[in-house]
Length: 81
Image (cartoon, rainbow, N blue to C red):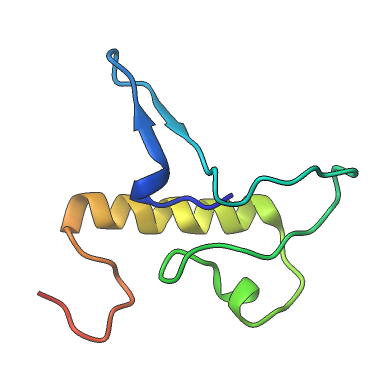
């Protein structure tokens, strides 16, 4: 997935759902590996084009999302506010 603030939807009862309409394709196998993500939210193994575990990469992106929500800036910028 592409987990980032722009892809988080919040309902009236504060349920959060992640969406991404920018990368919609048909996946034929549950073990298919996709390349994607957004700068600053992507796990290092994807950037380095290494083998990866999609669930672990999503957890990494979710960690970055929480950091942004609590701190107000992305953690891997060269300058911080």
